[in-house]
Image 1 (cartoon, rainbow over the protein chains, first blue to last red):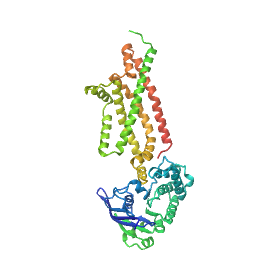
Image 2 (image 1 turned 45 degrees about the horizontal axis):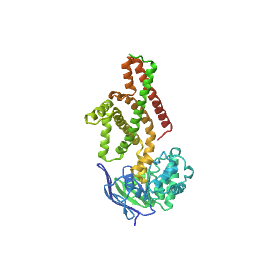
Image 3 (image 1 turned 90 degrees about the horizontal axis):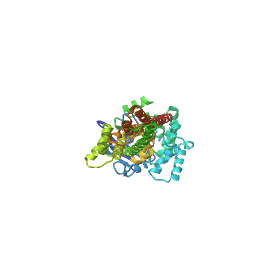
Image 4 (image 1 turned 90 degrees about the vertical axis):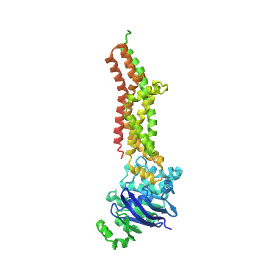
Length: 242
Length: 218
């Protein structure tokens, strides 16, 4: 059974229909990159997956459980679906360690000592062990984003959503964040990424999904998709970004 | 006519100034408690509750404090409640303060970037958990300077309580003037009294503001 299955998903903002019927399944351990022009609905799709946006029609399932509607509380949802934002959104008044420990302690009610152990483990995974006592403002963008990834991992989610996580970074800091994601992918983490990093999409993902005007226009394995796009829209998009 | 020495005047004004301080404290502490509840209701509650809080804030911001004091004192009497000047002044000033603090604090909560709410939400925190652990600590830092600054308005606002017969600094000044006919001396001392109370608060607010922006909150 697929880990994530999206069925006929529709979403409008007022008059503007942003998602016009999305069907998508993602297997456990799969890395899926969503590409497309801005306004094509990729971020909205991602935000529907963790219910930051409520969709108007269709279903989203996680394994055999509906995650839309009232069937899953935000607390349960956060232990299934993690998210990393373009703008990091670390809590500026908390240290790196406290940022990572907050959700396990408050939401899962993990004892502090255990939460600390988990936090240290995930921070080691993203190479931030040395900065546990720093505040976000003292870190570079790349370091902040790695902490944000650790913060999401601390809830031990089954799937991690990444919304243009390198778009706010200086070019020389992009690599360190992508390396962390690549390692997660190797460890078998299920990743769904909205990205403008075409090389990363091609080299790391198992499948690339091209969105155009609120629909999935084309999808497939990255090598074929990038070398032999079937539709003129995708060919045009690839030409414009590479 | 008895002769009042300058010391008599100052001594009496100082005694009355105690009640200005006490009334200010009551209004400020009471107003802060009511204001905090209103802020939480206005930010999170159901839509009708939000409207109600907004109406309350608009009402108290849109009418003179003097009228609010009259209504609390004479209005309550007309309705058959026997309220003392103390009670009326405390209640009116508390409500007045709460309306302004609610508005100030709402602004501070809204000044926390929406990404903070979203990050808390995707980590599974509910509304109250997000408020307590993520939003309020950040809003609090923003709120301290304008809150301390507003406390100056509260202190000066207590002067109006003199019109319903509450004997504080201003009322004592008026009474002394009726006995001595030395308005210039007396009201200079009265004004000086308010200045001594308010100036340190203004300075402190300015200091806090500089420190806040010096720390470079984002």
